[in-house]
Length: 414
Image (tube, rainbow, N blue to C red; front, side, top):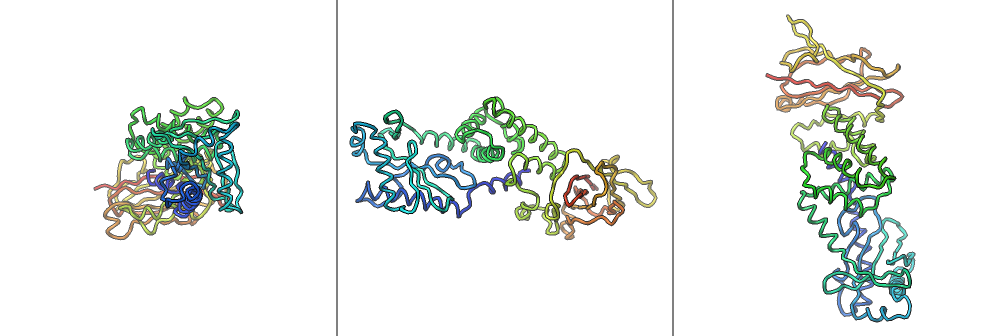
């Protein structure tokens, strides 16, 4: 399933257009503040620091608010610190008035510790946190609560912690954070982004041994089950059950069923077979002929329905034998695939897919992968032509939806 998880991560990262939009907006806001506080110095980005998911590079689609620190010259600190009441609130009001000069058509609000610039296109808003950088590189930030006071904050240490974890784990820290953020969004679990980030880093701190992305996601949900509040346990337990089921389908060669379980966890951003077709073209045995059932009809595999396949193997002079009783096949065998049993109620439509792999099929341009409609016999006749690991799938379609899937491997050896 690695190619599906790779595509999933592409699907949930910001597009280039979204990244450009974010950069334009946070630089526009900070440039305006810079021109006020540093009138003799050209803006080069050094007076701002991206924080939050943008600073940590753990952001996902859709576009969200951008959190950014703007560094105010230290000479202004006393001006606000010596206010008789809530100089912190006065500082935020000043930031708001400066930004209103440039963004007169946008809604600008003071909210808690930040000033929020709400853009009309709603793709990105900017939350700017005015602050004073100390010699130790920590920041004094305004808090308007209880008459106003200054907080000391070290956002760089949080960013460094994620950077180090991601480096130590070959880029998997940020990948897992992004996937879990998408899961929390999909099931509306009450779990803050920083809590997800902390949990993922704690998970990897236990010297986790990576086997596969599927297994990593499952193991993390098991780990998370002991970390979350009681109100969130049911969401995590459901994710554990579904990811375990997805792995079992994957190991059984039932790719489509595995995909469906991951979609239940992560939503439609998790790709189907057809959406990785372009990436699959880089694989050794990619076939331009390959088709995918999701391109033909909606997939709605029902756990209550099943379809079991079998195959009669025959050759002149040999008694027919069932494929399930054989470890592998040789060439020049006749194969009669058939539906052994199913509990899908009539009526339903049957479709078949045959996928060839291996150097021999590749050299002869016969990797195949098309989907055919059954002619009414509910059988598919094939022959063993090429050495390699192949498979046949059968789809049962009811009310224009694929409700059951059968899969059988065909191993042809010399």
